[in-house]
Amino acid sequence: MIRSLLRRLEPGQAMVEFALVLIVIVLLMVGILDFGRVIFAHNDSSHAARDATRQASVSPLDCDTTFHVVQHQTLGQDDVTAFVWYRTIPSPLNQNPAWTSICPTYDPTVTYDDDPTTGTLSSAVSPMIGGEVRVQVRNSVSIATPILSNLVGSGFDVSGSSTMTVTFVPD
Image 1 (tube, rainbow, N blue to C red):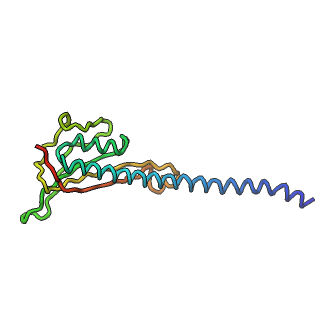
Image 2: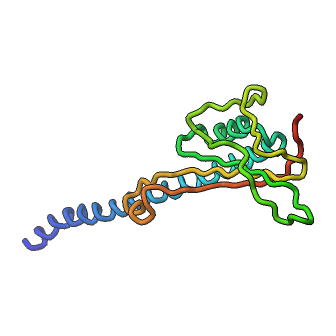
Image 3: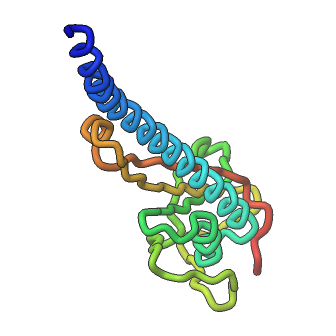
């Protein structure tokens, strides 16, 4: 009789153990997905920064086209910011010239075009071939795992940055 009673309790015990283990497994899987989303956002930001820097290296004053590349690479996400800087060629008098912001604030809600004749051109600097242009793209990723969001906050910021030499300055 005691054996039959224990056999009836075992399935209930297994259900309780399964429920406890299932919670841990689900949290682990969602944590892995969050980690993957952060890595994806970092790669996305880095790729957008490289492509935008390449565009800016051949047309450093065309902010709209540079932002169009960022917008295209990040699929128009609303939580993306982008910054574009330029610095002149180092000289014997100034071995480490300062970076100057050459574009206005990136607005992800604006649709940028890739036509330099219709966009806004920067007048912040007079770029020269041999100078450097840098683009930084930041992306914010929300964390879905409750335990992770308590540890790192509700979001995680990732960024990508790229620097290239200006190879062409249009007239």
